[in-house]
Image (cartoon, rainbow, N blue to C red; front, side, top):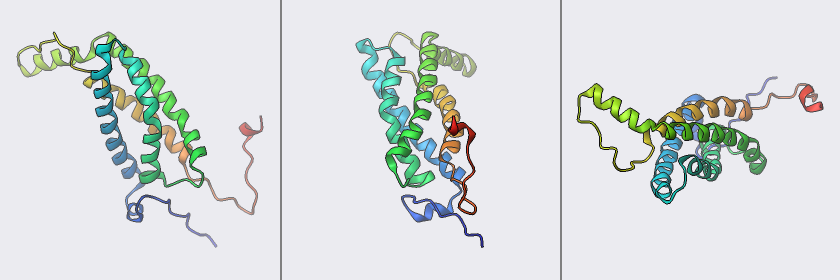
Length: 180
C-alpha cells in the first residue's frame, strides 16, 4: 500500500495546487525585488558614508537570509517541523551566495558596471550620454548579482529542502558521507 507523500504546510493550502517550480520562481522574483529594493536603498544610504558596495551587500544579505528562508518556508517548501535546524541547514546556501554576490558586487562596482551599461544603452538607443557626475546606486550590477545568486540558491535549495524519501521496511539507507 503506497500512500501519497504529505502535502507541505504552506501559508495557505490552495498553494499546493500550484506547481512547486512555479511557486519557487514566483517567490524568488518577489523575494529578489524586495532584496534589490532594500540593497539599493542601503547602497544609496551607506555608500556616501564611505562604505564599499561589497561590504554593504554582505551586511544586507546577512540580515536578509532569515527573511528569504521564511518566504521559502511559507510559500514553497512548507513549514518545517523544526524551524531552527531548517534555517541552519539553509544558512550555508545564503552565506555562499553572499560570498559570490559580495565578490561579484565588488568587481562590478570596481569596473563601474552601471556606468558601462548606461553608456552602452545610450549608444544603442541613440539617447544623450548619461551624466555620471553623481552616484546613482548599483541597479544593473544588482541585477547581474541577483541572477547569479538566484541560480546558485535555486539549485542548492532544491537539494537541501527536497522531501526525504520514505523509509522502506523501517530501515533507512546509510549515507557513507555521514559515517566519516
